[in-house]
Length: 141
Image 1 (spheres, rainbow, N blue to C red):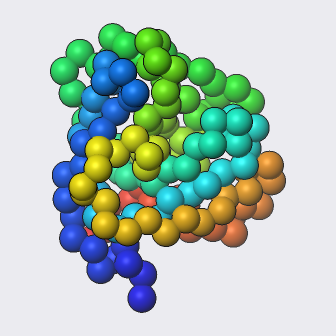
Image 2: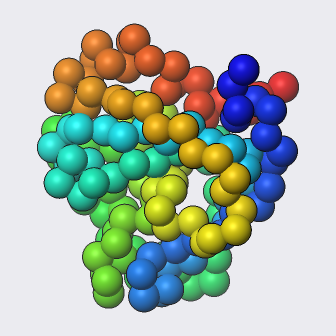
Image 3: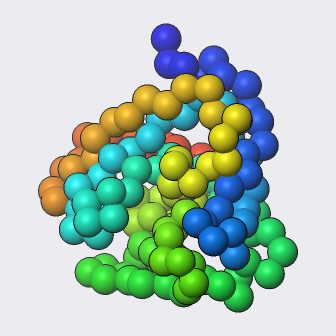
């Protein structure tokens, strides 16, 4: 039984440490989190769940406080707060039609279960092909 498939869909809110960046995301209350070991995610201890882009919304004037870092293929857009430096979400290479939400940046109370899976970003192509991560940003019918 996959807890994510059984969980109700809820509205999560969250953002960065200084609260300059705030967002809302519609996702299950039980999520699969990807712990990636690519050079960027490993150094930031980034662990995230992926949602379709249309389920994610920046709130207020949050965009003013964001800056973006890219490297390698420049497909992933690693966003972070200009004030506190926290990456609360980013646009992943694995899911260009989705948003990766850092689960530790979700406000407390809406996540009921977190299952952590490893994504071998050091061997990106193989891990992408062997995992189901690409399906995470597709709308489930």
